[in-house]
Amino acid sequence: MNTIIRKSVLSVAGLAFAGGVFAGPIAAHANPVDTKPVAVQTAKPQGDQSRITLNDEQTANVKAIIAATKKAGLPERAAVISIATSLQESKLENLGHLGDANDHDSLGLFQQRPTSGWGTPEQITDPAYSTAAFLKGLKQVDGWQDMPLTQAAQTVQVSAYPDAYAQWEQQATDLVAQHWNS
Image 1 (cartoon, rainbow, N blue to C red):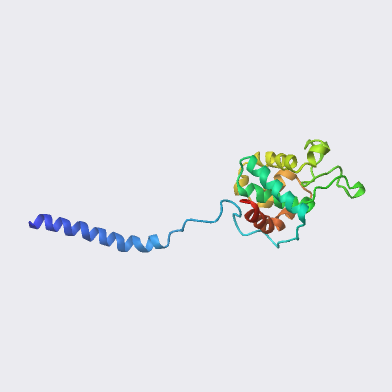
Image 2 (image 1 turned 135 degrees about the horizontal axis):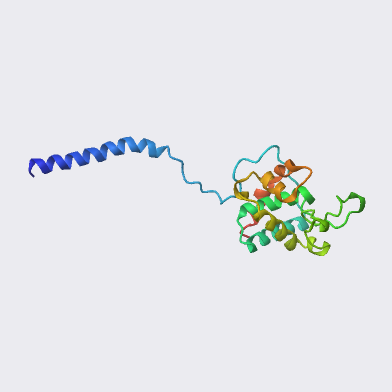
């Protein structure tokens, strides 16, 4: 091999080796690909977390919310926000009129009000309808996918207790993880 070619090959090999030595440690500290389910939980839940034991009706309502979310073509994060909202509003119970215990004319899983344009009492107490109505509102919130759960829920619900939704994020996340593929 002539000297010029030999020096060129050795130079290229030397550069490749040096590049690997210097780039190797940098690449080793690069952020790994996040392999958790998409947007189920974007960050550590805010504040203290609450949890309740669900009965069969509440579990059926979780499944109805997940089915409506899938039908709307939305990701798991939308189901987490919806379930956390329903946990706060009704403990996942499809509430009818509660007389003096009602907050105005609020009904159903999300405590939606007919007088606020959410639908008729019959519609609002249909889990599929009420979830679709909530999701329609959620889709109108710019950047909801990246917001803290409580901010996304509050923007749709306009609650007197805007921070209360956050306490249900972990249980909602767990419920979606348990039932999304079932």
